Amino acid sequence: MTTTTTAPQTPATESPVAPVSGLRGGHLPSWAPWAILVASAALSAALFGILALGGAGGFNIAGWAVVTAILYLIFITVTSTIVEGRRKGVDRLVTGIVVTAFAIAMVPLVSVAVTVVTNGVNGITGEFFSSSMRNVVGEGGGALHAIVGTLMITLAAAIISIPIGIFTAIYLIEYGAGRRLAQAITFLVDVMTGIPSIVAGLFAYALFALIFGPGIRMGIMGAIALSVLMIPVVVRSTEEMLRLVPNELREASYALGVPKWLTISKVVLPTAVAGITTGVMLSISRVIGETAPLLLTAGVATSVNYDLFSGRMMTLPVFAYSQYMNQGIPATAFVDRAWGAALVLIVIVMVLNLVARVVAKIFSPKLGR
Image (cartoon, rainbow, N blue to C red; front, side):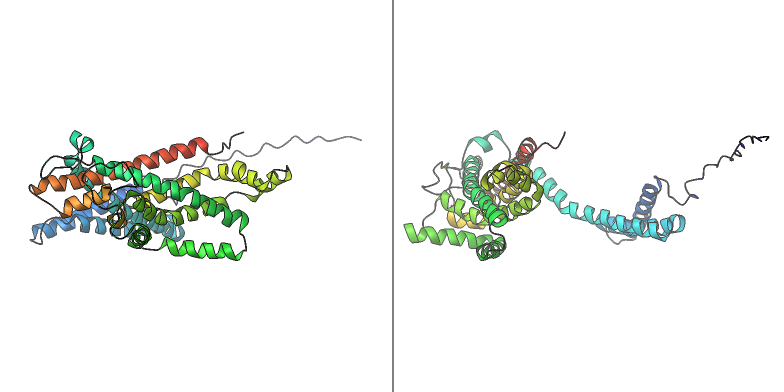
């Protein structure tokens, strides 16, 4: 029998596909959104420039920004729908709306930061950090007493609030699931989260007035008032972070015979330490700028006081308020000291947040192999 061998056929050579231009290939090039944004800004500037030349006032920057955003959203949506299709056009429209909302949210933040830095620099001197307002009537003096009071009162409030808040959150998540006591605590925490700060100040003042009599003013009173505001924030943030810890970690620890309290301290808390630290710093940032409760509890002072349990203590928010509202001669010195206190307060909050990020990064569990 003769076997016939058939040679394999060589596949036909496909002709190379010519590259398609970005405008015809169903996809806008990367430079197209930026070009549309520049064109929208130029068209809006021309419109408001004509209105300004026509006697309608000066060039309206806010109106120019709003019209630019509207024109960009219209142009990018229409262009993307024609070139890329309706689905991609809607996607670019929603993306533009989200970016615009982010830019609008950043406007007050940037405005406050620029205003405080611009005006606060005038009041920042060496004397501002090295002296108090004792026996100072006009120019001169500083905010040393207010800085010391702010740090001591906030530190005392943190010492009171952080353990209470963390242990309360541990009970709610690890021990109190489904219990009536846990439900009652959750309800009270929700109520405390929304109370005005002046109510916390009145509570602390009334508490100490019952013990020491009316008219009492001490730094520890301010710390207790701030702790009333801090505790619910610490509880809520810690509670959410503990919920994010996988149950598999707890079960693995229990399977090895580790008791529950040791599992919480060695497994659960280290896993959630980054989020807990962020929540704690958020609570500190929430109370460090409070003015009303500290006016009622810590009062107003012109000299440095290092004793939380004796005498009035000045804080930076109260110092800024009193300097701005009780301006003397020259008024510029009082305004500069008020803006300087506001700038120092913002810097303190920023430093505390940076420290918290470093601490969270150092103590958070390492996820590498």
